Image (cartoon, rainbow, N blue to C red; front, side):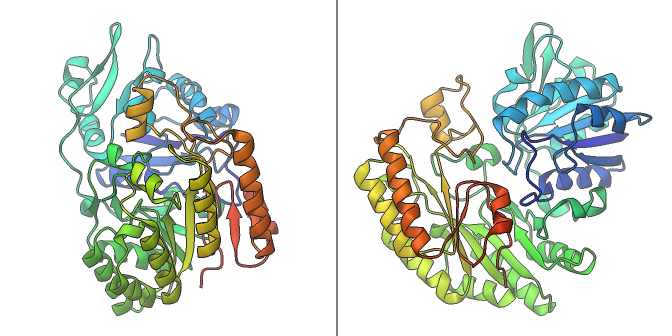
Length: 455
């Protein structure tokens, strides 16, 4: 089959100052290609492609199926971007393609994509690969046949029909190295990305990761380092980011990855996302020797009571110890903070501000709480019905679960920023600000570019 994978456009388009390759789409597309299908990818966001340009692109092309991944692994799309999905699907349909959509919306808010006269044929819930493979093997999408495939939904008569969720777990080790020839690497910043695992061992109440991926699983060290070596040798990568939600869950695996890099004498700057509770001194020292120079810790709050409320599985004392040890080992530290978590009052906000100032991380990312589809907070507060905003990088509060009036909250944040300015932090209020900044320390209220001062 001829299959087109689509990364839909952000609204507004993601700034080229921060845009990264759509590695989640690349992985699924490359796996599909390995099954013997002809595969293309169009990154409408990176190409800043509107419907008119998409129509021109589709002229004289013949795709049997178009697969749209929206908010699958990398959550950079705004809520406004979702409204374009149906328009894109309608245009693809006019050009003769069947439409498959995967991601959080396809999993949890099916009614936004499936309705009378919808242009969308199939939604895939949670992991894509197994259900997609079976769909492509099916050929004829007769509804009786579709009902035999787990993990999908479609419009049937007057209702959405959803099959039983797919319990079979995809083996990440059988997925080939993501084929970067399917995209134009010049569209993206100078940081190549890999996904070496799915899921997380933590159970933070605000996070969608556990609900969506269900369980943590990781590729074996050899497969991971094969991809790193490919990126260095073939793509001339100087910086590589593990975009795993939590790359350091398995100490033995990460030490194995690091030793494999060392043994192969691969020279490249590496970064990853991790959690305070998974920190291990031996592991991080080995990672540093392998070339890891940056790590992102989601800390969220400086108040033990709030950390307990969100099920963060750590405490302030441990946070202080881990950040200090991480700095001593020689890694740059980015920390992220959700300033308006439930049960946050003036006292707890002051504790958070004081902890930020005490830690003085290299990079500080200030967030507001978002009730993400699939999270425990979504189940608790939205009851699966309300249209909560999903964009995790909003620059203003979208909920009222903290105990602080907005005017006081804004005043406290302003005071924090004033103190950080004295400490020579660069402020990034919009992605393009990164290009104008000098120095090595950053505080951001928007997505912050990866790869800053990696050595």
